[in-house]
Each structure stands twice: as C-alpha cells, then as structure tokens.
Length: 134
Image (tube, rainbow, N blue to C red):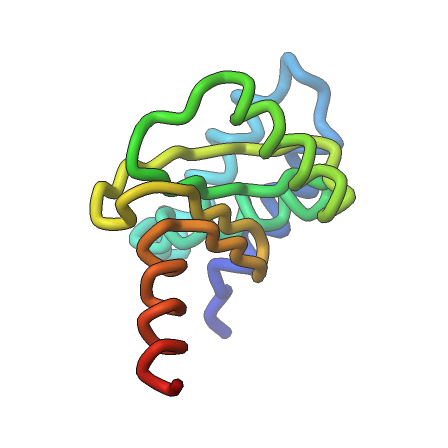
C-alpha cells in the first residue's frame, strides 16, 4: 500500500507537535529515513504543502494574498490584517503582497476561499458592463 503525501504530512505534524524541542532534529532525520526507505522522497514538496495546510488549520493561521498597483503602506497592511482576522476568526495572518500595475489602483485581498476585489480595473469593468447594458 502506497502512503500518500497527506498521510506523511499528518504523521510529521503529529510527531513534530508532540516531541520535545531538543529531539526535533532526530525526529526529522528519522522521517527522512522513512521517506528514503519507502522510495517516497520525491513526494517531499507535496508533503510540505500538506504539512503547511495542517499547521495553518491547527493553529488558525490564514494566508492572505494582497494584490495592489503599488506597495501598500504599513497602516493599510495593519487594517487588512485586522479585517481578515475578524472575518476569518484567525489567530495569525501570513500576508504576501504582490504588485500588479494592470489593476490600475485599489486592492485585491484573497484569503481562504474569499476574494475582496476593490481594484480600479474591476470597478471600471463593472461600469463599462453597466453602460453597455443600458
């Protein structure tokens, strides 16, 4: 029976979250040995992706992608973090900002399965669509 990346990730999470901090290196080495012994080392990227999902779920961490035409200032980032924490009930937010000049202005915030699109490009597209319907 083949072990799936998700099963490895869950096992790694369980082992890492219960082991003492000074034994973490040994635990990770043993985990790598198991992967090699099972000829599953090629799954490492997928295992880490699955591990990240498990970690974020267990510790209420929400990944947030922010897209804007220009770099956002610290105050805006703080306000976005508060908004996402409040809406998602997360204890922690991991924010990643992307610059995309094609949105012209405004901001797009993505977290979980939610998208808040307040970009100028979207507003103009909506206006154009409404004018064409009229």
